[in-house]
Image (cartoon, rainbow, N blue to C red; front, side, top):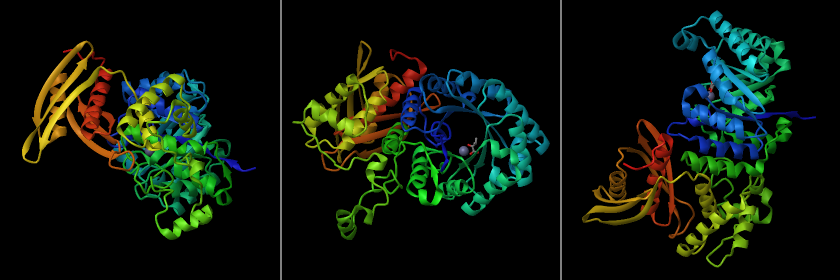
Length: 508
Ligand code: KIV
Ligand code: ZN
């Protein structure tokens, strides 16, 4: 029987370390539920000791997400491990993931610890975690730049003290596939204790080899792969989940392993993560990029029409991309809309489906054809909905190439309505300044991006902003066929997140 490879998703932990990404607890829960639906084996939900927000998010996921193992990260000290357990303890499958660096450079300059002290700390950390849960993962940070003899001693110690998963990270993405595969094989040969635990790998993409390194590890006996949706993660990111899974599934002839992931949920998961993190997926990204299944040249189109396998090594349906691109319009009824939602893989409550239908109708009045991308955008926005402390009731913009942009906005804060105006460096700047005045907040726009959800001049614009308020970054998203309105909605959405986070009611 084929070996089973565990897919350990770290989108919510390492992925959240992507520069500019800041998810709140509700957003993390939303993603965790989708990961569970996709049937990953482990969800690393966060690093509880890092912040109150991280702690709350891990706790929420531990309490609400059933199916996968829920892991929380902890350095090799009691404070971190106790916090990880406090957050995890309501999970039906909790795992504490503790780590300490093992490379000479990390031990000397970062930890200022001798190898013997690191061995001792690892043993104590695993023992402490083991008091709380049977499922304990131990990672040797920067393993790929560590002395192999020392790594063997460290892993043997961790297993003897109760670790059930041993993780070998290529923390700085330095390894090559040949080296990394060789490292896993050597560890397996020299550490007999590894035969009774799960051997995991965690590769970063600094040289663009994270997926190749992980697959080389699988070839050499690794049984768990840590990865993140859309390849998110620290610096250049982690091995991309969708690439790992589809490589193992599509090239079963090479790897001869099984995974438990429902690949038909990959596309939706990628879209959800992209929309909530505000990190767009590059069009030529393998598996989930917009062009991954698009055939541009005539020769390719001809080939695919005659026989799909001429240029397609996997089907779009296998990752959940619907093949028949039905276009709905203002004459489409509730039945057709609900049917399309089902085909797109959305399993939402009747209440949510009705809400989405209202938005669809509204959009169909402004736009001739409503595409699958539009429907996904509507659902994505709705699923990420947060309490509206502030609401944009109205805006009026005047601008041109010979005039100073001016914007007037009316914002509702509970039962109070405030109207303010401002000039600015263009219509978006003027609108943002007017919103700041109306809300009485001081914040800084850190990032702004806009993209068309689908093709055509009447396409919806999707704006994603990152706004800094009181030292924290909030991501906001707005959708409209009017790009100034989308910009204003995104900004108000980010402010609402900041208000919810600080428990403010919005009244001055
Ligand atoms: O990259 C790394 O080494 C990590 C560990 C904490 C597993 O993220
Ligand atoms: Zn990492």
